[in-house]
Amino acid sequence: MTPESVEAWLRANPDFLARRPALYGALQPPRRWHGPVLADHMEAMIEQSRRETAQVLEAGRARQSLGARVGEAVLALLRASDALECAAEEWPALLALESVRVLAEAPPRRHLAALRPGEAARLLPEARPVIRPATGCPTLHGEAAPVVVREALIPAGPGCLLVLGAREAVLLPAHPQPLSFLGRALAARLPA
Image 1 (tube, helix red, strand yellow):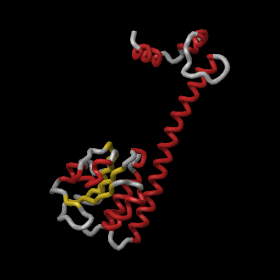
Image 2 (cartoon, helix red, strand yellow):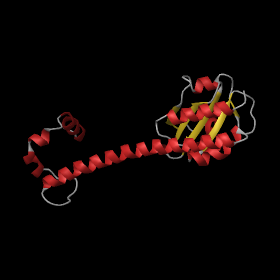
Image 3 (tube, helix red, strand yellow):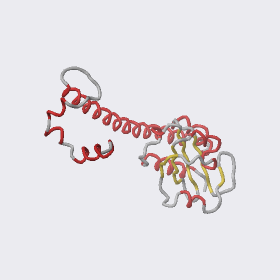
C-alpha cells in the first residue's frame, strides 16, 4: 500500500472513520488543539472546510472587484477624447493590471500594436474572451511579458483584440462577463 492508494480508498469511502469511531483514538491528529483526540480530527475537518470556504469567498470578491474596476475603466473611456490613449495610460491603474494593450490588424500607431492579417482570429478563434495562464508572449504584453502570470484576450471589434495581463492570477478571475463588456465598450469607441 502507498499513501496515495490509502488516500484514494478513503476518498471512495468517506464514512469509514465515522462508522469506526474507535479508530480516532489510534490515529495521530494533524495538530492538537484541546480535549480528546476526536476533537482534534473534527477541528481539522472544520479548519479544512474554513479554508475551502475562504477560497470560494476570495474568488467571489475578486469577481465582484473586477466588475467594479471594469465599471471605472468604462467611465474613464466615456470621458476620454482618445480611446486608445485611455486604454494604454489609464486602464492599467484602474484595472489593477500590469499590462493593457490593444492589438489590431491595422498599421501600428501610438497605443496600437499591429497584428498580421488573420492573427486576431488565430489568437481568439471563437471571438469571445479567453482567460488563461500567461504565455509570456511579448506580442501580447510588450515589455511586461516576463511578469504577467495570467492573461485575458478579449475581442474589441473586427480584427482587434484587447489584451490584459495580471501579475497576480486573482486579479483576472475566470469569469469573462465583465471583460466582454469592456471589450465591447472599447470597440464602440474605436474609429472604424
